[in-house]
Length: 176
Image (cartoon, rainbow, N blue to C red; front, side, top):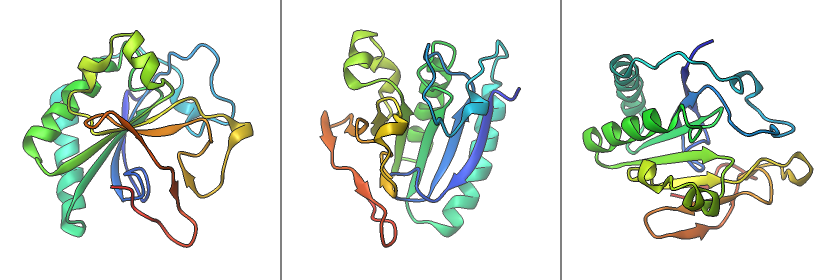
């Protein structure tokens, strides 16, 4: 099983195109029904080669910036805040922020801001701008909306506020 996958997304940047880093493994005991990344739920003990990850990120970012003026990077899973993913999510977000100053980094997690505080995870999120937080609930799914279920929300870590959901009807409307 691969420990990470890099991909290009049209909406993972909160309505903006983004480089998406998927980290394998999810520590949620009862997995989200309808999870769109079931293949990444299984964890692995394999370590991520940070130099290889940086090299791959730089290649993808170079191609991305050829077409886009502002960089958006999303860190998803699996679960990026699982104990075995926290450090790599923190390291890569720091690397990206230091090298590409004018970028937005978005983290997707089943955890809420209260969970993050309770588990003392804020130190891992120093370089994260926004979070799409909360478990995906298939019964609360709303088509063409980010986040995709009504119990989830977008959180601005810098201003410590919840943001409005994004409607993607009639084309993508950018949140950031």
